[in-house]
Amino acid sequence: MTLRRTLGITTTTLLLAACTAGPSPTPATTAQVTASPTEVAASPTADACAPESLATKKAGRLTLSTDIPAYPPWWGGDPATQYPNEPEGGSGWELSDPYSIEGYEGATAYAVAAALGFEADKIDWIQNAVFEQAFAPGPKGFDFHLAQISIRPERAEAVDFSDPYFDANQSVLALTPNPISAVTTIAGLQAFRLGAAANTTSFELIEDVIQPTAEPQVFSDNAVALQALSNGQIDGLVVDLQTAIFMRDAELEDFDTPEPEAKVVGQFDVSAQVDQMGLVLEKDSPLTECVNGAIAQITADGTLDTIYEKWISTGQEIPFFQ
Image (cartoon, rainbow, N blue to C red):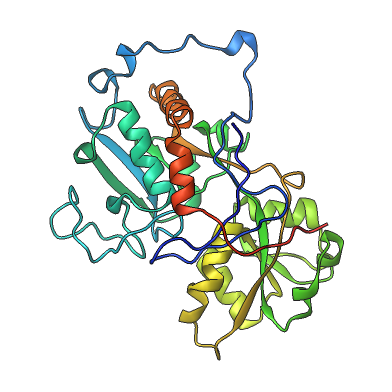
């Protein structure tokens, strides 16, 4: 069943909102690309996907990865807290802590692991400090990685992607009273200075969909991009909707500016850009088909729906650009 929900504020650690009009980001239930008949391999047997049969990085354990800092609402928890099954003395995470099993991706990671037969005490986490390194060519230290990474054919040349676990919408974040705050159409955005993090679908959307008259600015990551917005270097920051809402409601408070008032100006319908997120695995990983089976299981039994409801739920309206 395809979900149509709205986004909002649901936890004490996160402030999250989104639209109640039109289509909204949902847990994904279908793969983006279907292989041709000659490319379809036989589905693995249950025994082949049993923990003792899986060729994981550490025998009998699952090594997972995400970016540092780990941003809400995708991740939750307090890095200063010693969570069960976390290495003694903490694990060095910033902003959130994957060992908390909180946040949309945090909960999804553990749900996939459980479907594969790995309990929480059999999971180790490693940090990825450079976003694009997760899908760069070469061997990986993780069994799978998740950090809002969109499934793209060019990325899939270097890594395996799982079936999608989330469909995302891009959005524009701005400070008021910048005139961009009143824009309601994609064409209306073209006259403004826009920016996004490098190697992201957000930057692709600026170039391919908005096509502004001024050269778009690219930043090393979202934190640098948000600082540029706060400094007035750009009029609008393009970023996925959930991240934009967290930036607006929490992160901008940390900047040395006189209480900037931020606004999520609008979001882009899926017709503007298909943006499905997948787990990243090493190229030709022996785990890929089993991970896909785990995603199918947590989708079919309602687990992914429950995670969605807990961490990404109803709230205020964010309009769609026309």
